[in-house]
Image 1 (tube, rainbow, N blue to C red):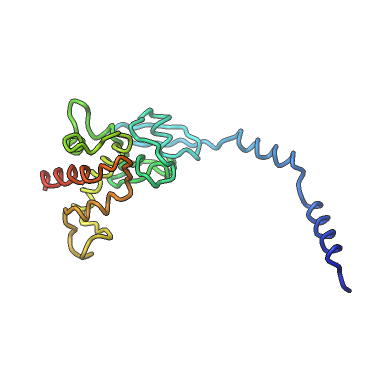
Image 2: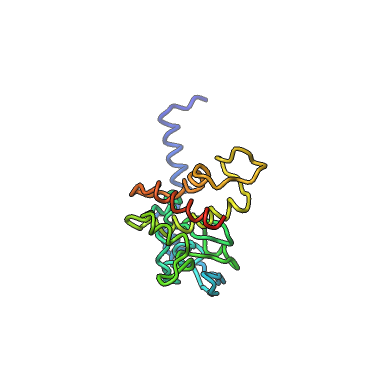
Length: 207
């Protein structure tokens, strides 16, 4: 039996229409789901203080820090993990806080820019950024500084990077290593050379 193209299209349209849900049912289901967010209790240590939070499970660590704990030093830049403005230190390692959910950090120790130093007693990296004018407009600076502090820790811990010439030898505190590790933090002001100078000075002083 030969089926014409016209008959085939009619049969296909009728079949699709018979299994499709009415639009209002889909809309009602979506509205119901949006109205009932799933909550979870999360305990996180931030800058040395323990916090018990009751959060929508979809809340990113970045939004929890800014909206729940009011630690607005951590910036929301691209919100896609591409600019590094939201970088914080989690259990000693730097992460993009916009790409991780707060519920994933139950029991974690988080350090933001507010936890590194104060206006009265700056962290050495903060002081070096000021000295070398590594901040300029300042928007990316919190993420840059948190990343820089973690980068020096990575190098001292012997963690190699793509720029390390020998993966079995401890990486060296040289400009190439610092540049490679800081490449995820973007500065639209173009203060990269000043930032490298600031990090290098802190590295030499603490070597």
